[in-house]
Amino acid sequence: MDKRITIYHGSQRIVAVPTFGEGKKNNDFGLGFYCTESNDLAKEWAVSSLRDGFSNRYTLDTEFLNILRLNNPDYTILNWMAVLVEHRLFTIKTPIAGRAKQYLIDHFRVNVNAYDLIIGYRADDSYYDYAEAFLNNGITVEQLSRAMQLGKLGEQIVLKSKFAFSKIEYEGFEPAEKDIYYVLRKARDDDANRTYFSLLEESSDGLFIQDIIRGGITNDDPRIPRNLSE
Image (cartoon, rainbow, N blue to C red; front, top):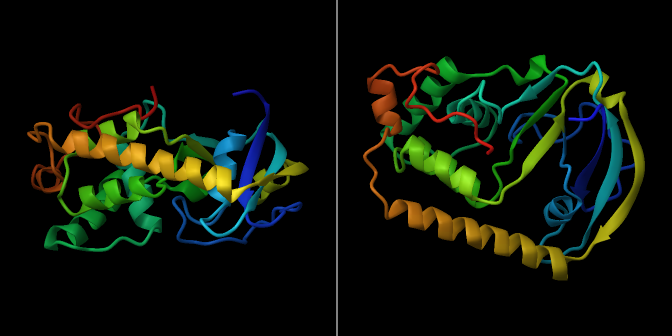
């Protein structure tokens, strides 16, 4: 990553001054300012089926920032899951799900608040459903990992600390038209669903969350997929 990068924040308003402490605490990685290096992806995130939005553009100086890269080989997909279940609200559909959530937090948790900046996948639309299916013992960890790798999800960049907020500069905005970008967003979601259902038709002899709990499996087990991005 270059020291100075261009990032985009998709929103239904113009955000000239990102403010530390604002936002929703139940986002993927908790409270923070959620961005991407893709202008098109930001526009997809900015729109709804009814409303246009904006892609806000910024320059971020990453020098001296403490960065957590959840998609590199130091972390497994269960580190990403643990961060997700700690912050997002999941529907507990099976008796195993409550124990699964706690097991993931106890054994795979990463303290995202210890970092200035986080880079990782976004649990957008269908991808949130996949994570929920895994938590409820519906798919294996291998199926979850492959769905994330094969889907065209993209990465999000999240500013977490006051120091990170002090390093961002507003550069302007572009409109995001719902008639264009909601269609693209839906197509991305439909493609992800097709990928997911094709995976469900394959053999599911891998590790379900119940197997992981019963086996006391931890982050150093070679059966847990690493390196989400290829």
